Amino acid sequence: MNKQTTIVTINSYLLLLLSFFITISVYVTDVIICLLVLSWLCSGNLKKKIKSISHDPLIYPSVCFFIYSLISYCWSDSSIINNTMQKQLLLLLLPILYTLDYNNNHIQNYKKTFLLGLIINIILSITTLFSPNNIFFKKGHYDTNLFLHGFLDHFDYAIFLCFGILIILSYIKKINFLKYFILIIIFLIALLNSYGRVGIISLLIFFPIYILLFSTSKTKYYLLLVVFFITTCSYYIFSPFQNRIHQTIASINLIYNKPSFKEKVENDAAYMAMNDTLPKEYFISEILKNNDWSEEINKKSPEYETSIGQRYLYIKNSFQLIRKKPISGMGSNSFEEVYNKLHPNLDTIKHPHNNYIFILIELGIIGLFLMLYIFYRKILIFFSSDKKDFLQLIFPLFFLWIMLFDNYFLNHNTLVFFCLFSFILYNKDRKYNQS
Image (cartoon, rainbow, N blue to C red; front, side):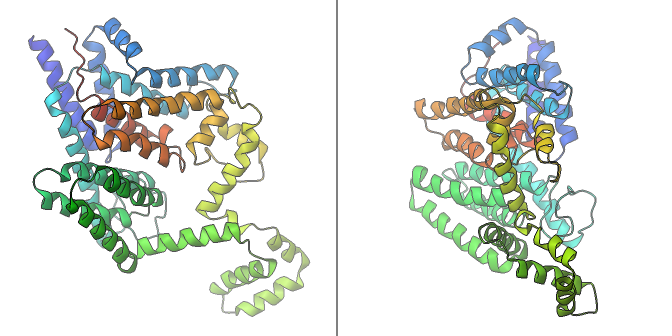
């Protein structure tokens, strides 16, 4: 009995730490996951756990998807030992969490510690405004741009901030409305200045969904108006948010209105004039005199040089690969090799920034069906439950939405996030018991 109590206590604290560190440190998160796996193994009853996993409609779809990913290496040219496989292994965290012994009374605290981790990120973000060269924020994208950096890359950080706001909304109907309202404003300002477009757009979609489907009082409508007001003001107050909007509009406009040869020449000439004392007109004249130079500029495709333009090109080119093996796919960890082999003149890429396209190429229609079935089972839980928890509906829809824009279902941070909140949101009324 003492051993069982100790295991329950350890697991509960490890889950609290995992919820906190998931937005702060990949290294610490991985250490906690290893400890949870070790605790799961040491607690015994593996046969009972495996039986429970195989019969649970929320767990076995994820296991089936993972097993199919393994099987697909049979027709892939890739070795099974690779970075993609390391990330796919994280999917097994879900059945481990579901069959852990833990203190059910703590499960609501896991959401709060997740929010606490985001608050620590926001505090760090604010310090980047005063100390842009601090060593703590995650570097690698837009390092020279001034915006609210966190411990994570801007795309993961914005996703977590967005879902953090949705979590706070789940507490609004309870006491201390003002406290949660202020917290939403803080999270919203951080999100709008995080440079993460997907997170911002997601909030603009899912916040109104919450209002329309789950609001029960006029207070929620006032909250919607306040958020709309803050978003509008942020466009004029915060340059990161304004710059991101302008970049997005300009990128989309380039795709649909490709620049003419004359515009390409003027853009190149203007760029060279910026780093020279000679005027733009001089460089235009020199370009037009030189046929080789003119031809080189004419071949340029600036519409595909922006972030959105590159994603559009990746998806466009990927359909050629999908048609080759639409049912079973090319096999796990094959995308990078087959794509870059088909398009050797383009920049090397690891994935098309679209989870559905990525899975269709590697695992085919079978893999895509297995992946979608995972989320289908979660949505069924919401509609079959008497007590409606809007996060049970929002979470799978949220994930299905963001996967349109990146490989979130196979990225480290977001895959751990998926497993953790699948456990928090759908396991809170069901406790696995080894006794």
